[in-house]
Length: 367
Ligand code: NAP
Ligand code: FE
Image (tube, rainbow, N blue to C red; front, side):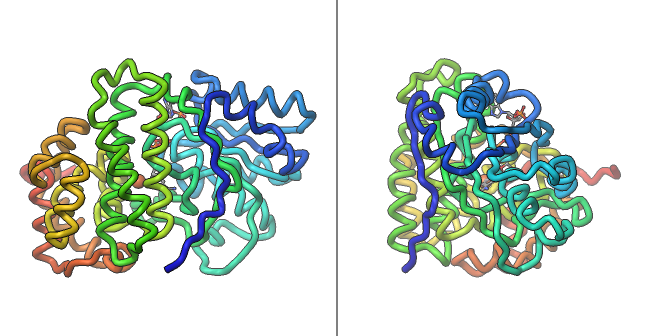
């Protein structure tokens, strides 16, 4: 049994303004890492800049983080800012900017290293990271993971280093600018973390405790009556469900649906939550009978099929050609990291079954 959660987390209205001492304690020079638009719209960037200006903290902004950021995107930020003398990095946005902030914090602390460092298994320091989430799915504000797109390998993969944010500042009001579709996609990502953490070879009493509270909140989120007009309390539940799911995968890692999602996102440009959600019901159907029943009853569903229908309702269908499925089956059978986290035996037949039950199969077309 182990427990490592080294992130101090606050979740409340006006969260940034309320934690000025925690922010300024991290140094005199901050690098803000964010996406191109959303943090300017929902007020999160303004709130951070105000605190930094009022407290004489010198800062720069890198606002070019792409969705599913690539290694090149990280190195671009590092190249532009390597002479700034950054003391700490502030990631603002969905999982993409938060993951980018972690990787940038690693590279800036090791200025003599090349980009290969990201995927090298050696222990090196990293700059402190403050994570300010504005979506409700990845839990990246508490996880040590940073998932980057690797074009050479035509997929995404977590970097080799565990970068724990020092501080997670969650203001549920930043969700106000999120579209119903973004909320639904990220809500399903959080469900993926909960299910994949519970059904996982690394699950423990402690990780399952986070899952159980997460399932309880997810069930409440699933009952939100009007997702285009959510109350503060609903936004708080969405954010906390995501953070709890993040705490769960911090212990266990994710399993097959996340592994399967990375290639789907890369090859078919499917958003992360949708790509994960596609495989969840089929993954759960293979779980130990008792665990499966526990999850279904915690979420309020009678069968994996009914849960799958509900997930499809949120994310819509995904189609793949049989050629794409065969390619994906073979590469997943080589993904030892994700296979090791899966508690049931996975052979070619199982893997193919999960794919074919989860997607609409198209006739092969040459792209
Ligand atoms: P995202 O890729 O960060 O953002 C998706 C889109 O939503 C972007 O266009 C973004 O705009 C916009 N957006 C973000 N917050 C918004 C808001 N409050 N209002 C309106 N629009 C908003 O999406 P995500 O699903 O949160 O993150 C996905 C990434 O996280 C993937 O790369 C995935 O692999 C990774 N992930 C990481 C972990 C982990 O533990 N580290 C876990 C799961 C997933 P801007 O670009 O303008 O900001
Ligand atoms: Fe995820």
